[in-house]
Image 1 (cartoon, rainbow over the protein chains, first blue to last red):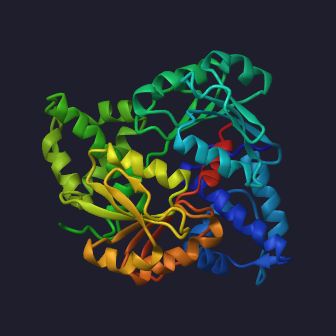
Image 2 (image 1 turned 120 degrees about the vertical axis):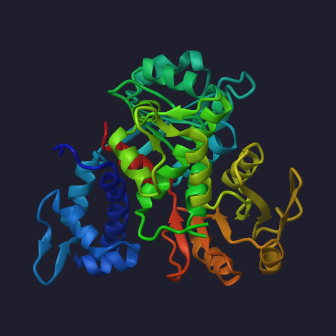
Image 3 (image 1 turned 45 degrees about the vertical axis):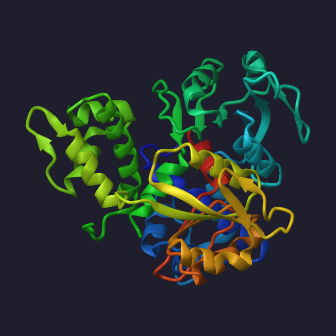
Length: 206
Length: 206
C-alpha cells in the first residue's frame, strides 16, 4: 500500500464516501462516471471531487469521466481496505451493542472481532459469535488477533483509562464515542466522535 | 444572532469543540487562554485555531491570549446555542435508545424532545419523561414543539422515507445515522454520520 503523505484529514474522510458510491456503481455495471454526476449524487462540489482524486493519480478519461472499477480499487488500496481490519470494541452499553450489531451486517472490511466491558455483569454475554471479555483479557486478545484499531463506547469518566489500556496493548487508531477528549501519544491516531458536538455544529445551520 | 456567510463546514464543526473546552475553563475560573495552550489541549494546530476564531472577531489580548468568557459567549451565539434547540429522534433501536439516554445527561442546549418509531411494538414505550410516538403523529408534534432538527436512527432502507416525512413536517436540519446517503432539498441541511465510513477513513492511518 502506497502512502501519500500530508493528505489533509478532511480529504481522507471523504474517500470512503467516494468508495461506497463507486462500489454501488460497480454493482450496477456502470463503467465510467463524471465528477459532475458524482457531485450531484453525493451532494458535493464536482471541483472538490476532482481535486481530491487528483492527489492519487489520473483516473479520468477525457469526456467520459472516471473509470469506476479502477478508481474503486485504487481507493480501497489507499485506505488499506484490501484486507480485513480487526477491531476491538470496549463498552457494551446501548451504543456498543448498536455498533456491534450494525457491524455484523456490513460488508465492509472493518470488522469488530473482540468485545470488552469493565462490568462483571456484562462479561460472558454473547453477541453473534462474539463473547464479551473482561478488561484483564484485553492485552492478550489484542495481541492474538493482531488488532490495531479500537472503538470506545464507555462513559466519559472511564474513557481516558480505557484508551490508555488500548494504547498499552498496541492499538494505533482509536475511534472514541465517549463525550471526553482523549489524549494519546503522537504515534496513535485518536478520533473523537461526539454526537453533542455534531448537533451543536448543526445548530449553526438553523 | 449574526450569521457569517460562507464559513466552511469544517470550521463550523470545530466551533463546538472550542466551546466545550472554553466552558471547562470557565468552570475552573481561568480567564484567558493562549492559542498555543488550546492547541496542545485539543490536539489542534494553534495557527488553525487563530485563523478559525479570527473569522468571528478579535478576542485576543496581546501577550495574554483569548478572553475565555467573552469568546465562549460569542461562540454560543454564533452557533445559536443561546436558546434550547428541540430535536425529534426517529428510530428507537439500540442506537436511538443510546442517543436518547445520553442526551438526557448532557448539559448542552441541544435537547431531544420527541421520539418516534415505525414499529407498533415500540409505540408507547417510555424513556425518561418521553413516550415513543407513531410516525402519524410526527407532523403535529413537530409543529407543536417547534422542532427544526431531526435525528434518524432507522435501518438504511427506511432512512430516505423517514427523512422525507421529517422534511415535509418542517424539519430544516437532519443528522442521519442510517448507512444510507439521504437527499434533501437545497434549504435542508443533511449530515450523514456513518460509523463504517469513519472506520474506513481511520484505516488509512494504520
